[in-house]
Amino acid sequence: MKESYESMKLLLGKIKYDEFKWKFCGDLKVVALLLGMQLGYTKYCCLLCEWDSPDEKNHYVNELWPKRTSLMPGEKNVANPSLVLLEKIYLPPLHIKLGLMKNFVKGMDKTGRGFQYVMSKFPNVSDTKIKEGIFIGSQIRELMEDKQFDEDLNETERNAWLSFKRICKDFLGNHTAANYQDVLHILSTSYKAMGCNMSLKIHFL
Image 1 (cartoon, rainbow, N blue to C red):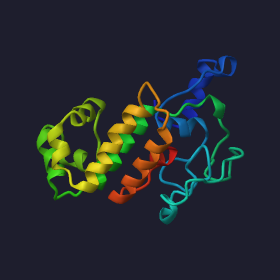
Image 2: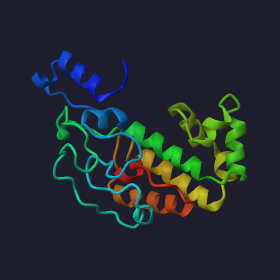
Image 3: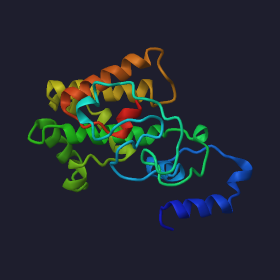
């Protein structure tokens, strides 16, 4: 079945969602479809606020964007009536983690030792996937435990990588550190220094 608004509406009808009102946690494409939003890199793609995705000069500068007051079809990237309640949506930590990894790898120096090490470490993964930062959880864990990878990164990349590992442990894992806001700020600062593009998943943090 094709991932579309109509398909989601049909499935929710079959499982009697209106009767049970379950909570949802899925990838961001599915969440967007359930909330009736347009897909792709569009303006106002955040389901929580009015983050302006094309406004790149303010992505790492402005941390407080106006909150959404409603999901009204025809306004701010909303195409259809919402199929689920917004308060029933949970952001998926795993997909945010994969998104952070993707942005980190895409921001690496492709001629540097760190990126070349990744290429040699995963010879069975296509060059295109590596350049696009497409990894699975087990590969990310393997890199996180690899001391050689840490040593091959330049200083800017190493700072960003260490902040990524820390946020996986202190925020996206089973426990949230008391100083999680400081951890998030360090990651944002280090990713900006690397020149990583702001994605919706980084924006959520």
